[in-house]
Length: 175
Image (cartoon, rainbow, N blue to C red):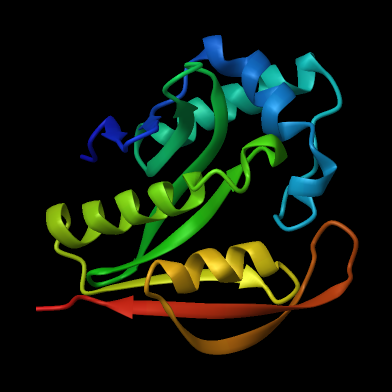
């Protein structure tokens, strides 16, 4: 269905395994500062991380979703993926890396590799990405990858009921 591995200069995007539980727990899933911009709760212990990893592995079987591995350390440092939301239209289903890895250029490598795969191999016509209005780092990433602001949606965080604004960015295939 989808390829099992995508490689960038510094990273591998590949399917998860139970061997990745510790790295994912330590590097991302336990991080409050990462979860605040997403729609998930941090894991508080390794047992919660094991349950989360089983769900991740199952989800990744039939979806365009990967863990992110840093080549030089071979550690799992995040996750990323896309969903087909319409005919030849793909939307990010979350891109997140641990706080220690932000600012290394990894986000751009991840998003560009997913966009290239969707456009070249899946024949996508459009890519749609979103981020919370206050997430300045994600906004900068989306703009640096060539996406353009499209519109804003009012949303409610399912974790605590707070309202927020979700900014939508798009890029179409260049022929």
